[in-house]
Image (cartoon, rainbow, N blue to C red; front, top):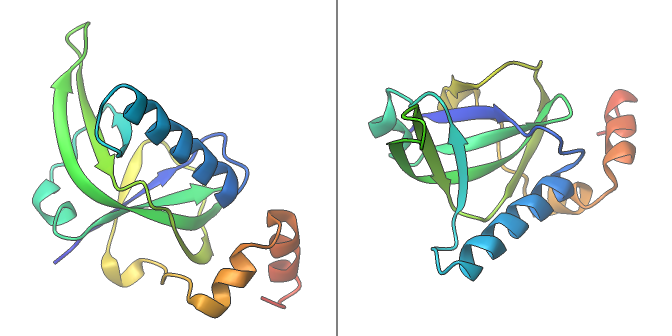
Length: 145
C-alpha cells in the first residue's frame, strides 16, 4: 500500500509559483543532460522507502495549505562532499493540484497516510485551481469554495 510524504514548499506563494520553480529545475537538469525529473535533497532518508515507492507522492504545503503533489520515482541516499548523509527525493515533474487542506508549518517532512491525503482536483475544480491564489483563499474563508 502506498504511503506519502508531506513537505513545505519554502518560498512558494502559490501552486503556479511552485510549478514555475519545478519547471526551471527540470529545464536545468535537461540542459546538463540529466533525466527530466524534479529532485529535492533532504537530510534524512525516509525509512519506509518501499511503501513510498509503491505509488507514493510528495504533497506540497504552500502558504499553510496542502495544495499540490508530485509522484515519487526514487529515493537515493548519498553522502555530500563533506561526508554528511543526504537523500535525493526524485519526483515526476508533473504537479497535480489537490483539494486544499490547511496544515501548520513544520520542519523536514512527515509521512502522510493515503486515507488522510487530500483528493486530486477534478476537471471542474481545475478551473478553480487557475484562479489567482489570493482570490481562492478569500473565497474559501467566506465558505464559497
